[in-house]
Amino acid sequence: QVQLVESGGGLVQAGGSLRLSCAASGRTVSRYAMGWFRQAPGKERDFVARIWSGGLTYYADSVKGRFTISRDNAKNTVYLQMNSLKPEDTAVYYCGADYTAGSFKYWGQGTQVTVSS
Image (tube, rainbow, N blue to C red):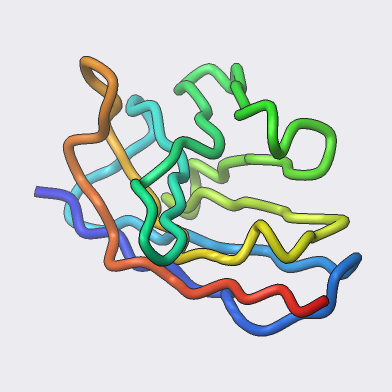
């Protein structure tokens, strides 16, 4: 089993930045694809970014050029650097590990990101 704990969320003004962290425990996640989804109130959980074990990245169009996903395998941690934040980025952000068939096998409990206008 893999346990994921997100941190780094908070309240920020539009145009600001936040860096989310996702620390994994239970087993090494270096060979897993990992990533981030987000869920705004009343909406479905949407894909944000994914990073493969080799470092290849993939982003949703809505965040491309503003968000950067990275990983530190020595720390068993994945990051999401979020710049130029917009009010529509407000959501609970969830970290996932072990990407298979369009979803992640393991999920964290989420961290709230709120962007004020």
